[in-house]
Length: 98
Image 1 (cartoon, rainbow, N blue to C red):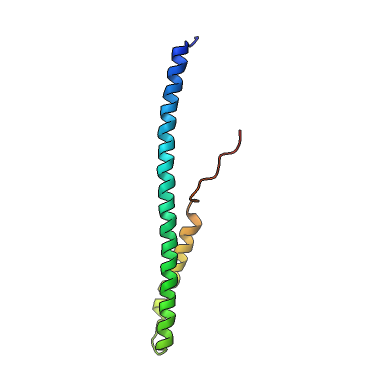
Image 2: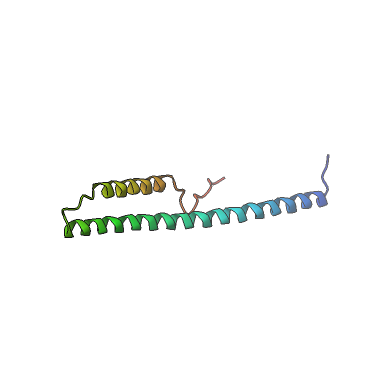
C-alpha cells in the first residue's frame, strides 16, 4: 500500500504530538527528582545537626545515657545513605548516540 503525502504528514503530526506529551512527562519527572534530591540533602543536613546537638548535650551532661538516641540517629543516617544509593540522578543520562 502506498501512502500519500497527506497520510505521511498526518503520521508525522501524530508522532510529534505523542513526543510532546512524552517530553512533558519527562520534564515533570525531572522536576520531581530535583525536589527529592533537595529533600534528601535536607534530611542529611538535619541528621548531621541532630548529631551535633547530641554531642553538645553529652559535653554538658556526660551522666545522661544517650545510647538509644545515638542508635536512632545512626539508623536515620543509614536510611539517608540507602535513599541516596537508590535515588536516580537529578539529570538523566544522555541516550547513547545512534
